[in-house]
Length: 294
Image (cartoon, rainbow, N blue to C red):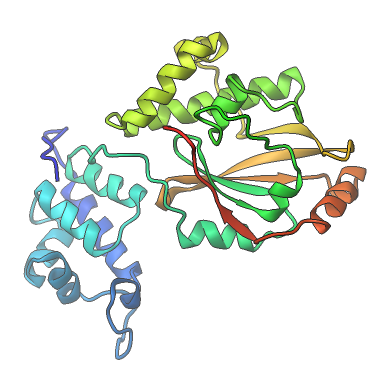
């Protein structure tokens, strides 16, 4: 693990301790390879966390009580022992007074994202990573039939397809396009701050700023994001169209996001969507990948 210097003189050790205790008590024993039986309370015991993290139970107690300041190595060890997600890991680092390790944008489709896709079979959905690459879709999303692949390096990147290689079968009003673009830029700006050493992300941003004057202008002067949603019309290969509202839902533990596409209840678009999705074939969830960096 790369060494990081503290980012603040006053680490909030009491809040760090409370966060560790909360994560310990919320961690199912079986999720970290331990037997769940014979417990009066949920979660892990201090002794178990200590053993998994390579420290004594007494030291875990002192950390949780805010009586000891952890090193970055201790923070990393506790996060690994608890199988902490990216968001929880970043929070532990911040509370201890350190910058989180700035590695690559995570692309793993965790069980939470998979369940989300599986449990809304009638709702077109996709999951993207923090760099706006599609990493998984459901069959209802593929049924819309609009995602063609022309062969560019960033085929599966939403920002690239929006600013540099737009879909002919994806149509938005000027107002909705403005909202959509503002969300993409805001997401990528946040991601660049969290993952400053991700070379693939840097290459994507450089290419976007070089190829798209509109993206570069928004990057320099971003628009405020009022709501993480916008409307679009999808033209199906059969010539019929359906207008759907897209809502972006964060999956913070894995640093992923899901986009859910819905039609107004009882509308002609809802009936058309049900018809299109009803004819869908293939797996309920499909993991996808990028053909190039980003």
